[in-house]
Image (cartoon, rainbow, N blue to C red):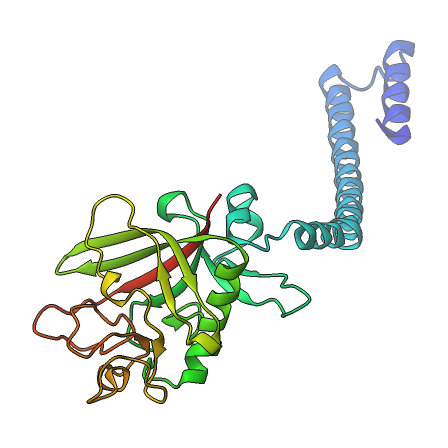
Length: 285
């Protein structure tokens, strides 16, 4: 209560009790007091509101300054320290810190630099490195040997990770392979216990372990084959370059093989064409 209001109330009380305010009726005196109380109450509340707004503004400024100067740098530093460098590590971090697509940067070794790769942590408990994805047909797969060696295409669309990267990863640790092929309205998945890709000198040769569970072992006929592209013919056909015919690099034995070239022609072929194709590898534990 303000000092002015206190004085007003005391004066009117004195007038009423001393008889000097006899010329004022009780109701008139009460009205004077009520009006004064209402007036000064509003003034007090207005002042209080201004004080709170000022205080609220200062508090917000302090919180903002604290966030900008301390929390944001701390969060950035923390995020940099905990950011996964392998796809299997994504299974043990707060994914709210890292938004899709889930791309990690392999730290590499002294003999070669690290590289970016896309992770899949939804399929079969996660931890996969995606090495091939074809879902839209937007990316041209009719490429040269060097393109397939280094990789091409955006992670947000169709891409090939790159033979050299696949070789480096599979040569450092044992990896399993998962191939997903939606086919004629159903989804076909083949899981291989082991995948190895040799180095460039050996033609990035495909080496597969046995399949896990049941399924069509559609890669078995090209197991042990070198990789072929339109400008480097490593298939067994003496008549033609099968990769050039298929318009995509792949491990090919001959041009009439039943093995599907997942990097090959995108248009429908005798109603048996595979549309969406995906290959991924995961480190064996």
